[in-house]
Amino acid sequence: MELDYSAFSTKGKSHKFNEDRYRLLGGKIPLVEKSGRGEVYAVFDGMGSAPRGAEAAQYICDRLFDVYQDKTFSVTPEAFGALLQNANKTINEWGCMQSTSKPLGACSGTVAWFYDGSLLTFHAGDTFALLLHGDCDDASEYEILTTEHAIGHGLLRYFGMGQFLKIEVRRHEINDGDILLLISDGVMKSVGFKLMAEKVRFWIRHSPQFAAQELCRLSEHYGSTDDITVVLVEVVEK
Image 1 (cartoon, one colour):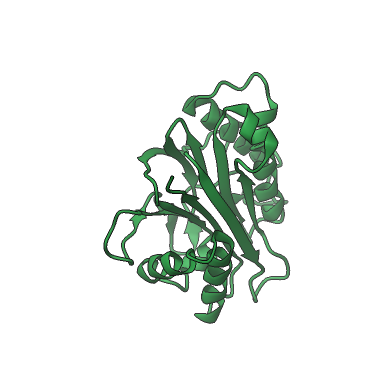
Image 2 (cartoon, one colour):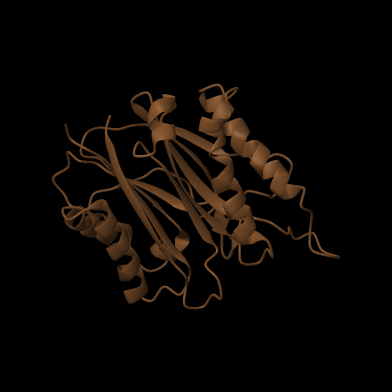
């Protein structure tokens, strides 16, 4: 399986800092290529209500390097889930804001692990994973791979919410020509999934980088004021 990938992120107009983070651990990186442990891609969105939200997002992104740097890591979905669970626990142990039960660190996140010919997603919060199938006739066709763990303006699940987090884990079949999108909620707040799928299929003819950047620009054009992040992974046809 050969993957081409890129990402783009921009600060929301209503924010002082960009609290989104992403990670591209793809085959272009020698450490990843030689490891035999697959490729990992992720989007995390620091919660604006948490003073250390962006730090939480960055912390989990950094922990993903353990997949390749920790020689004791067993290459299984259970071990990958445990890695994320330990990161969640650490963030939770940062504590709460003074005289409240609100966490200091908190973030949504979606992680994609391409390994052994399939795709696993690990997810909590209101980031999203979409799969655009390469063998479809309708340019606007898409499949949502994750559940939105949110109600109103609140999150039902997020990294940092407790000592144990119920992380959503799913396995997906993938084929040549498929396109995976990992997006923060700053994208979906302004651009519908059908339009997103149609535009990305057109833009990716130029390059994954062009498609990721244009989707962020489209989100701004349609009025998103939140931080906007797109990670795009294409399964290259051989």
